[in-house]
Length: 114
Length: 113
Image (cartoon, rainbow over all chains, first blue to last red; front, side, top):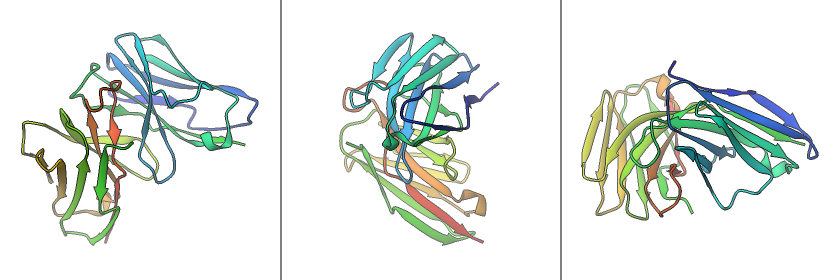
């Protein structure tokens, strides 16, 4: 299995909802990532899980919280989002953390916050 | 701030022609990668070039890296309609931040049949 899967494909939520995005890989990769991509913009790194350590982009608001239940799964918990959080959320994995790694991306979850 | 800046932002060519995209970056890097994204989907890795390499080939792709000018180019030869996509350069190991890639703004390539 050489792919990264993401569920759901689409999500519409209100500002008071709590929802979660799920990402899974079975390639034995040791690093997983969440990126946010607004329309016609490049992806921006949100979080990195590498060798069971979490690294956070300090500009990401606390209404986004990642969770890594095991080395194959990476969740992104969403709470009290704002309409400007509407975007494509991309998950990726790489064989190991650090530099010089090809990253494998999932198809993304398109999130709309009403 | 974004590390890479692609040039041009949009490019439209005829099928069979060559397409060249450029990327400039600001800080020193360990590697530079190119990714393709089809219409709001996930990104696909194309090629990685290390800071001590000057040129790399993969099929119809040719990437160059000039660390003195902090720039890279991606050449796609004999373009096909299926090459229509957005192309991003990405750097890692820059800025001392967390693992992960910093993407340039991207070039949207349209191949006219």
